[in-house]
Image 1 (cartoon, rainbow, N blue to C red):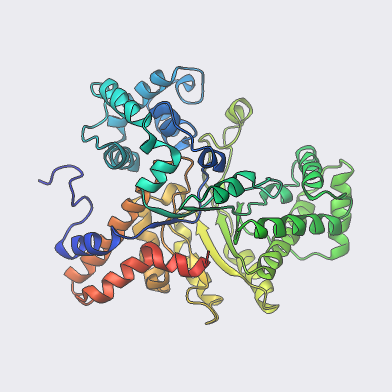
Image 2 (cartoon, rainbow, N blue to C red):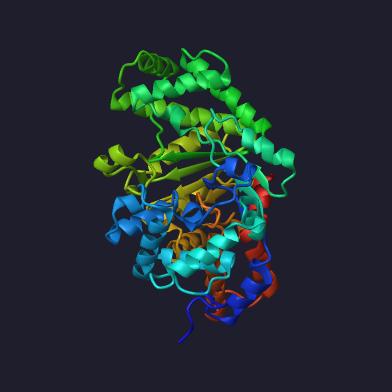
Length: 466
């Protein structure tokens, strides 16, 4: 019987261990998609306690706590920080076989050298000892980033954002590159007329121009796109239920935009046509400046209307959706490709049924211009655990080239989530180690070691060219 989470955690044979310790461990982290706040890096925030750095904003933990019978005041409510931590400590023993159990103890061990398991009997001592460390300079935001050996961070930023904190970080000489990533979801969210017009008013101010027509909207967005480019952005991201690629005319889109700007609600067909046009135009923009585009596809969001009204979005009431993906995705990519304006693209699916779909779709638009131009993104959200990662890598291996994969990302709001890269790397090395053990791939540590290093870091560095 193996001890829990020893040095060989997830590494089930000697080849896996060799690949991990001789190759994966030494590679820096290239975290090209996350949701951490650049303001906290710019100001080098020092967190007061574990709840601030670990529980605040973590909808994964909140979902588990609610499932364990914990009242909302201990998740997003007004309970004290220690009370919230206590409830998390009560929940952790009940997360066995959930990835949260692994993530929790990896983070405690790697950042705080804490070997004890978190439970009600250890909670107070772990709280006090970890909080004491959090007060030291080594545990500021920048200190934690250095501790995790992070080479590059790409945050998630709206077109109206000032990017002032990215500029502050760059001017400070901080060794880790912290770059913006363009997330224009609100610019195409015409389903809510009032909220959309409020957003366009903000965009007018950011772009310093009036937006009365669709053409003016595109000019304003292009203005901001250039501003992001000037501040180091080379990466866009879209969070969509599914890709939209309806037929439309320019006249139709102008008419739809005029209608919503007058405060009138759109029909479902009008929304789909408008969003189809926007995704195409964003693709053209990205190609014009040599950016990579990302699509996160398949989340069914805000399922509980009651709790959405009470608590808002992004607090743990989203799930996997089952939308049609293949045909509209193909239509959008093909339209851009026919005009030779298809950028490097990363596709993430949330429904595991779509693994092979994405694995084959990317092969349709590889053109030999860039190794791995079209990427099957790493296991995302509900799939960023061992089983989901293995399934994603197996589908990519069967249908494409795992060796060209740009690897893992945190997709997190927490500065302690860099251990997800370790979790991924151990899973990758074990997957390859088992293949060697089974005689399915050669026992060539030079070949395999280079492949591991590339997937962990070098592929991303070469792909994004930051």
